[in-house]
Length: 306
Image 1 (tube, rainbow, N blue to C red):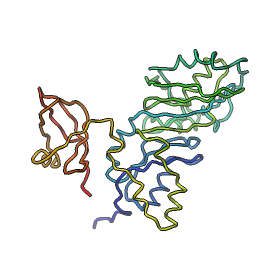
Image 2 (cartoon, rainbow, N blue to C red):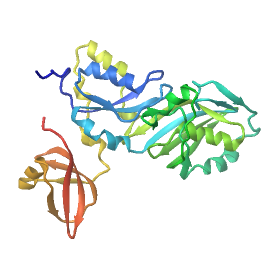
Image 3 (cartoon, one colour):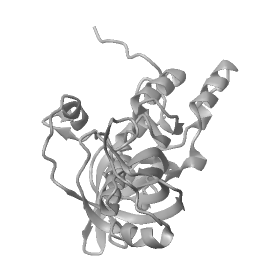
């Protein structure tokens, strides 16, 4: 006897402005219940301390969560100078305090920040969700176990100094996936010679979505209390895939793709992922392989028709 799946079929993406002091999974489960959805997932966790853009995928959109996880991100962070903590943020115990250099201003800080622009090597924090032997690093850290972590290349597209106060600075960061803002702030503090940790972190962009696209959980709760449908807040899965070129298919080519078979199309050769459309709707992602003056499209992620 097959088990009946709990929840209803909900398909699309919802961008939440994650509140502070709750995990990303906590937000996901809360929103999933509000929608009564059978299947949902998030696209990259934010620390409980952090707020901001958290795209949630429902149903068919979960097929593209990895692509969204791999996307560039942007943040605004506040760094407290002169204090190092065990976690790299204000949730951890203080492990060292040093005087902050006097006379810090934009002119003296710019050369320091410039060392972290472009491609850099970064050692992930022991309090990150990065896994070692199947367990997240923060679990080892909580047990007092230090795991050797090789440095990894990340790219800081933009590192802008927003404000300087006595012992705090605000920075805006645009970066590749896998960049740890806590590690970046700690490294900046190391160069300054006084140490630093994150006291506030807000993600302003992820998967091409910004804070202007985000809604609050409290808004969803209010809508449900008033008996309003939440489905109109969802955007289609391809809204997060605009970085890939699109290809319209019809006839036998569309039928073949929908049956999971590769097709060959003429025209400008295309390499990499391609958004596929047919009969006016998004049908999924294919991977393109140039073949002379044509392209072989191999289906990778197809969506079911609603």
